[in-house]
Length: 206
Image 1: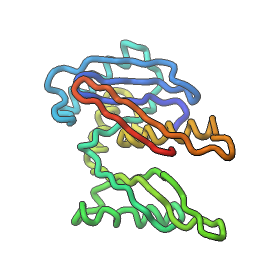
Image 2: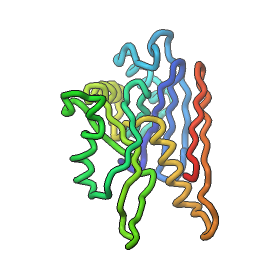
Image 3: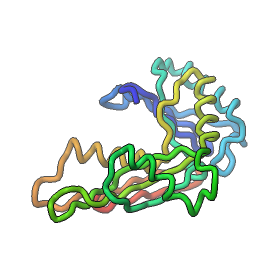
């Protein structure tokens, strides 16, 4: 994904846009969503939502075109899985099979992604197992978001459930502020206060 991007989160009553310049958030926008445009977490009209986002981009003079969007949990299947250590190409091949109990057929209709939660090393110090948070979303849904954003003058570069965004924040903090040697890993907690629901995300020991 490009260094500069617009992060977009669509809630039940508001859409949030945050402009990231590669180092920090430089602009944050909150815009109201018309009644009925989001119902039970799902967008009822992608065309109308495109108009909302396009107006917000124009009104706030947002020039960055590449964007990332948070997918609603209703649009994503998620599993925490443990898999043998393998290469990225091997993982891309094997990850769909971890959803065989949820996707009976038509795996080709889905896009798959993952976040690494941890690595277990063997006695010789080489990676043995991977602790993963795996996600699957219908390509049709992702394409609907891409079309919506394209109509708003933006380019979709990444789409992921919000929990993976929090994992990225944890990883970034660990990169910038490593735990001193001998100290236990940090615990992380994120509070998401929405208009209708409040979410609490806990990441014990990162």
